[in-house]
Image (tube, rainbow, N blue to C red; front, side):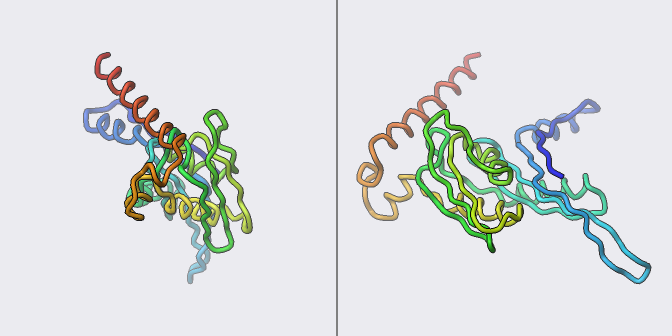
Length: 205
């Protein structure tokens, strides 16, 4: 079972509306839901586990694993755990700054930057992580294990290895111009200018 949702609030008081406004800021994607059984003295005791991805669609993403007797509770626990594991993903104009490979157990995920308009070329688990992180153009390839949990963790491992041109320059003791192609820097400046113009338009509206 899998799904995707943006959680929003409903009526019934200011407190509930405030909580709904907070939740609606995040993209929540349920990758897998599994039923597990534990053998106890009185027989079998069933519960559910949920692997959930949460992101703000603007460079922050996290994954969480929830377990409970009911599916909604397992998902809610996964969402809270995912928010606690948020990390920042470097992006340039909706894609990643350089090729990268992540591994987890037998799962291997390779990610490569793509030009605007390409879209997210990826399978379900990889796509869920990338879209929640706000990556709109990327090429990917999954190798080894097809287990969704391993693939999700391998994707996160790859994203954690990404470095912005500024990070690489600082690590090498060089200027940004010395480590990044001119086209990449131009794309980054255009992205910042576009975000600023949208923000200014929102303030003036």
